[in-house]
Every structure is written in C-alpha cells, then in structure tokens.
Image: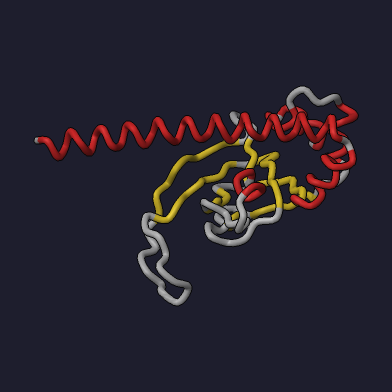
Amino acid sequence: MKNDLNKFEIFNHLSKEEVKLFTGNLKIRTFNKNQIIINEGEEGDSLLFVIEGKIVITQALTLATNKLDEGDDREKQLTNLNSKDHKIMLGELALFSPDKKRNASVKALENCEVAEITFEKIFEICNNNHAVGYKIMKNLSEIITKNLINSNNKVLKLTTAFSLLIDQ
C-alpha cells in the first residue's frame, strides 16, 4: 500500500529510497462512507493521499461573512474521484497558504483508506535533503500550476456562458 505512493505526481523523479523518506512518516487513517475527510475553511496541517476509496470534493456556494453567521450552506459538487482511476492527493494548497485554510470539503463516498503526512514533516525532510526538497517543490509547483490552468479554463467557460446568456 505505501509502495503505491511513488505513483503520485508529487513523487515524480524521486528514487524508491527518496520516496521512503516520506512513506516512513505516514499515518494511515480510515474514513467510513459519508464521513468528512476535510472541512472547507478549517486549518490544515497535512497532505493526504487517498489509497483506497471514492471521494467527493465540494465548495460552499457562498462565502461566510463571519464565524457567527450560519449563512447559506449550499455546496457545489466539484468532482467525484475514485482511487482506482486517479492518484488523489489532497491539501497541497494549504501547504503554501499563509492561513493554512482548506479551500474545499472532501467526503468519503465509500469506505476510504488515506495516508497522511504533516506539513512539518514534509518541510523537515526537504530541509534535511535539498535534492529531494527541490524535486518535491518542483513537483508541487507543477501540480498546482496544472490545477490553476484547469480552474482558469473552467472560469473562462463559465464567464463565456454567462455572457452569452445575458446577451440574449
């Protein structure tokens, strides 16, 4: 199971020995069907790898105005992902976010097995081995860039559709 981690993009171009630096520091967690794995807006301190199971990623449709305001609790389903079809890594944005806030919620659609490593441990490994740190940070920047490009394309499609709708 931990051996499968080298298939995740974050570990591209790392040797098996270099990947072991991370796998030796993983905590394995299990989540039952319908259990929340990540809550949007909460502080995150770890990267998660979905080893087995199916998840749904959602975001709130409205921004919370303050902590006391219950507000609108409707969510937009962004995607369903299955570990059989995708290598699912969660939490990479919180790794670099100044407030460490999670930007989406994640729920288990079936029983899930998740491997977790703390940001503190990631940075410790990267600081102690600069070559590994360089590869990890390069991979993370490529992952985040790819996700940003995909998000920008979705925004463009939505604004185009909205503009066409308004012009009618």
